[in-house]
Image (cartoon, rainbow, N blue to C red):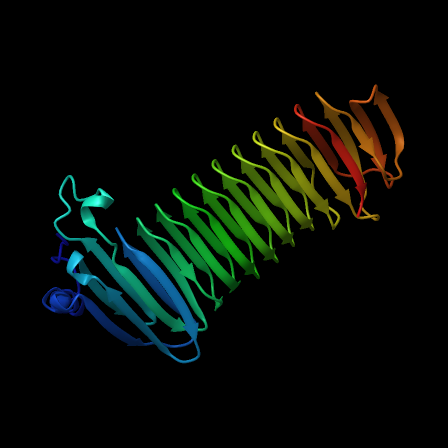
Length: 315
């Protein structure tokens, strides 16, 4: 049960009316806010869908309310919804025993920051002007074009971000990660799938133990490691620091813009190193090791694989 002893009176009344309205199996609430508002959802179960539109109202529709206790609260321009499963007991946590999950359909003003937490459901957010923080266990995360920073985490599904004007952090233990355009840097980590990044305006950190990587156009350094596939990447802008790409399960294919300066160190076990760009200070050991300077040298670029070849070419 929710502890109502420390809740504001308005929040308690909202929760109580929600309980009595649960026979309708649905509930609707609306809140007047100002541009730049914040919406918080803290649910221990449920699917989440968020859409944005012009205006100054947050609207919340909850389906299957007979399964949850709801609490609504507003402090200034922050709207908070808390949801707790009814009578979950020891065995109530098992999804098969609980049946279909509650659904939270939320409409927010175009300029809104989001902080969404749920368990046992997918999270979908349409195009939005604001920062987005999302966490779920047991579902996938799909975000549209976000004007702001993105932080997303799931333990049971894939993560997709169409675009972000800031930085993107994506972490999953059960699926792939796909990111379109990020104006800032990107951190993408998974233990259960591939990673695909179309373009990053800053450094990229990528980790997977279950698939390959495609790292598009990166305007910064790259730190990428996988034990389950090949790495394809493109250095489109001068990195401010060292880059390190490593795999034990495939080849490395790297494209470099013609004006980038760096020091290259490429080695492979199980293949060969080939470089199709002008280099100086070249040092080779057979066909599997090469050290050289590109455009006079600069930050380090380390390429390592034990399961394939290394190829460096121009963009």
